[in-house]
Length: 336
View (cartoon, rainbow, N blue to C red):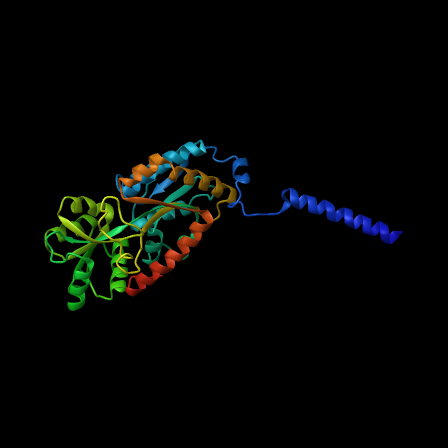
């Protein structure tokens, strides 16, 4: 009888535990379930978004448009503040100095990898000091020459560069800039050696237009007006697809070269921000990014909406950081 009674008690306990688990007792990451995000009282006051580069630039105006749409989803305003300096270091360090509660975020980009490996931020304050909220977009760059240059195609330019090692002059937007690293990636893929000329973005264009350099690697948005005006010829797009504004220009991959390095942007918060807060922000920003108004706005800047949720964005940043660190090591710019 005692054995039967014990078995009955054990069976009862087992059934109760099974029902408890079946009714939601199992644990899952809050960044993969929407229930907890809708239950928390967040946000209860305005939030702050740090924009890393100059007011009025593409990063600024796109970030503000995104913040406005996300604010509507969250029910509280997101106030955008420009905090420039150190290639983004000033803004990143400001956000890391704030309480990890979701009320301070950064409109981050490839710059988190570049500025850290340049030594502009303290050791340990790399991408992993942040949590990704959502990846939002990608921006292509372009390899272009003056319209009257002798190179009609990328292959023409490759042939010239191979026959004249180190003589093909290619401007970019500055030492260690995204465009500089892209030019290095192109150089590796083509099997050639360029003479890199770092300068600011506008000077990169005017130097080529003035006939003082052979080619440039610059953001597509900056090159498009000059290509459409007949002043420059784009040889290749460095991105995943052709651009609407230059439909006849092939991508590097179409031409057989494995280069699709793109400037990405997204939202990040300090790494200790609670899961449920990250999830609520993630949902709001992903919805904002898919808004047709935002998509049409981004088209003006040749920006491609290419979103990732929080967990996948973290993995993406880790992969990008490794790739960028390798490129910077090749040109002697990696300090940490």
